[in-house]
Amino acid sequence: MKTNRHRLSAAFLACGFALSLTACGGGREYAVPKEACGVPLNEKVLEPFLVDGEKFRIVGDSLIETGTKTWGSCSLSVDDWLVVGLAVYRVDKIYDPMAKLDAFRFDNRAAMEDLPFPGKGAVGDFNSMVSTSCSALTADSLVVHVNVSIKSEGDVAERRRNIEEFTLDLVPKVKKKMGCTA
Image (tube, rainbow, N blue to C red; front, side, top):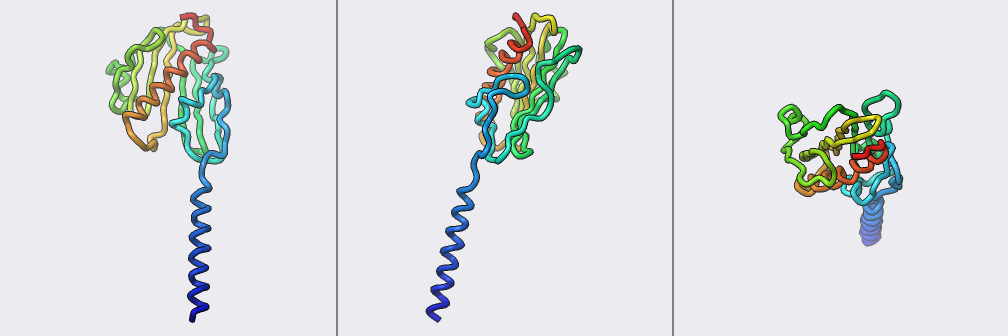
């Protein structure tokens, strides 16, 4: 009887040890590329949206249009989990994302104040939209959309700040790659 208790205790200890090793297994087994979707990435502002996983994927086009194409879209994912979705549109004027026409795009829309470039912006619980000038041969203005997974958890106010920070980092890079002078 004593031998059975020792075996049972040993089995529980071994099982507990195995479970503890499994719990430690997660983490990021992927590297974030220096560039994606035609623009440089800043891992620091992307960090809040990164999840544990094995493979970082870039799906879609370059955000920097080529030829007569007037838009580009691209998404960043980890193990088929959307991290960030991006879209850039070449447009004829600056559009106000706070206008009634664009209300459907947002949950809890708020204006982005004091943009570090000419334009207008708004941020929601899971996305942002910025419309900015672009004096280039390829565009008069640009609209940049950023979306994060609606499955993103955590503090909503913090996520909104992170979305805004990511957007304000991204837009100047897109403008530079497109040759915008304004």
